[in-house]
Length: 262
Image (cartoon, rainbow, N blue to C red; front, side):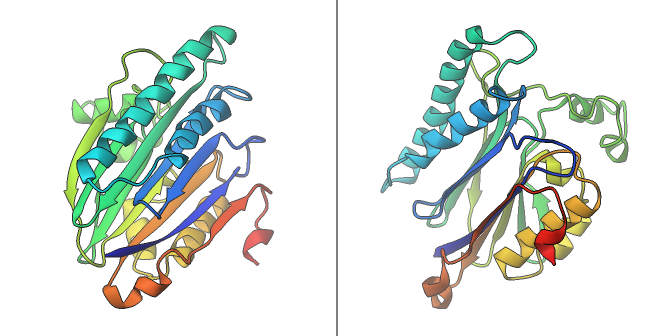
């Protein structure tokens, strides 16, 4: 198996600072997005701390070693950020959500904390692989509100778990099987709040990862994108497409206009 990926990140139509960060390690089968919080020199520091550690991961022959190393990276980022938080006032504690996809051969795993998500499209069906660590998700789980009410709930932006807030950090991990033609989408809530699962599934029918990320980003922007938007589309390629794997582009769009898509 071989993989191709495409990344897009945008400050959005309202925010002045992009506090999202990403790591695209197609070379070793690891991808991550992180959504920072806390404002300038807090949120951006938190998300970048996580992705910098992942960017420096070596290649491992063994899947279990790779998974353990990724988890250690996130825990180390948490340790560093908790230690650094003493330098910030209480209104600007550096924290970040994170979601990581790890794939080696037919083995895979998702590691996450917060409400950044991973979706998988397989056999023309989209499945959300992560479960949000958020206040509204807790309300949905307790049958207090309906799932369709969650996005418009006044506490929709309150997360219950994040990197950099406290020690120890509790990470969720889900093991996966990986098949040919699987497609994965990692995204911050800047996308998931702007596009429904049905819309994401429809756009992921396109086999071109770059077109998938651009279509989804455009959807978020035309709907106002009140938050930063970051997404990675990862495609598992058949053997005959291995030569093209890794050729997709990374697009970083900091200008909050729609001219990027003309």
